[in-house]
Length: 199
Length: 104
Image 1: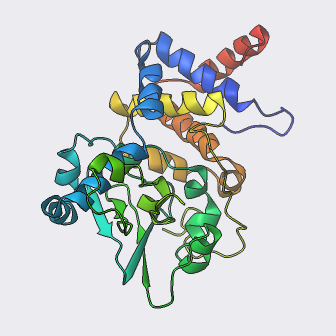
Image 2: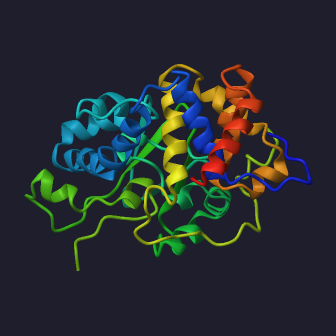
């Protein structure tokens, strides 16, 4: 992996293609496996899964209390489980507390319910500053947390992944879970946003 | 841990790189790298802690100048070499072949 000073660096796309083709030829990777995996992440996993969890919690108090007590099982009951979601903790936003999630060491994120993280989540500015001064970072998302609301920052690990249960917007009494799920954004489940009724 | 990975609380890292309508992958090679790394985990070639350890041994200055998925390329390459699944010579030779084909 070391490069001498006299050789130009190899384009990264070529390095990836070399590895993938060699692994396929050696039978380490089955044909089509990489495509199948990427397809799942591009088309099946994503915040729409988490939105179903949140909407059900808003609509069903019993489910909500289960979700807050045993996030992994309650989320799995809706069919969302597996890689990077083996142990889920759900934290509830209220009038008193606003939760926000980070992975200061890298990019741990609850894949089954949110899919892959946005780029900013994986970068140094978010990871370093949200634990130092969360209110100012949230303000960069145009989210201004009142001084009398406590901000709690949760640092993910490779074992524990967090999902924020955002506050249900007022004026949604009697809405179906499907209608409610449409209000739930990715950022509201990370804690860098909140759910709002469309203006 | 005391390394450039442990950056919680660091100052001077600049503004958030927020992007509207961000694609899941910005480049095709990122897409392929993601699929390969996850496939190798599913195949049981390594576990998450091993992949993490492979990436933590990327030299600090190189790490800081690498993009997220470039770090994956370095880490996965290291794992494959250390596990004797691929050799550096094989990889280099294949890169030459691909270069001569003119394709990426």
